[in-house]
Amino acid sequence: MDKKHIECIRGDITKLEVDVIVNAANIKLIGGGGVDGAIHRAGGPEIMYECDRIRQEKGGCPTGEAVYTRAGNLPAKYVIHTVGPVYDHSSPDRNRRLLDSCYRSSMSLAKQLKMKSIAFPNISTGVYGYPKEAAAHVALEALGRALQEPGSIERVVVVCFDEENYDLYRALLT
Ligand code: ADP
Image (cartoon, rainbow, N blue to C red; front, side, top):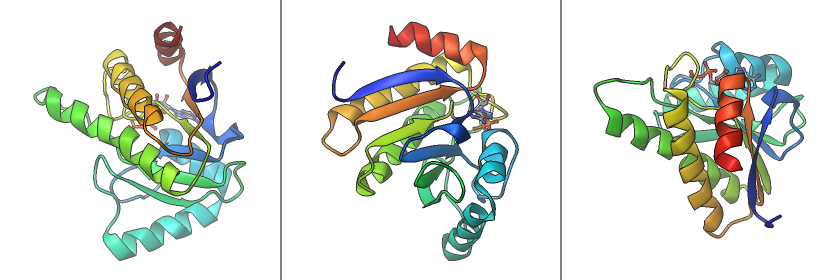
């Protein structure tokens, strides 16, 4: 296996023993449902304290960008919170650009933190409604590009919560 690689697993991202897990957050960094709710529930209140501080300092996190907090009770060291686009059927290019930016910004931040392993959920494919197959292509292209660029990250895990995403990623990665 290459030293730097992407894998997919089916499961709950809060359980992963990696340096960084990525959260599909919202622009105000206020707890939501889905993966965001699961991360705050499992990680405990420390993550929300830090999100509150970021909100006070800079208002939150714009769509396509990423910020980080520590990871509270989770096995990871940090949580990177990125905000995916709410899928807009009238703007395919904008959806793609913003989703690509989530993966790129998160990888770049993890490299700045000198982290070696990172796990991503399927950003925007829950309540934000991004079609799963299109999102998987954007994600794997962005992650592949980011892994080719210099930096500390050696292992990227895409954590699929639902079967449809898992089947898509497994097909694309084999
Ligand atoms: P978004 O608002 O970006 O669509 P959601 O949290 O609604 O975010 O969904 C993003 C993806 O995260 C969905 O594919 C959903 O199935 C998945 N998901 C939900 N809970 C978890 C979890 N505990 N671990 C990993 N992925 C999860």
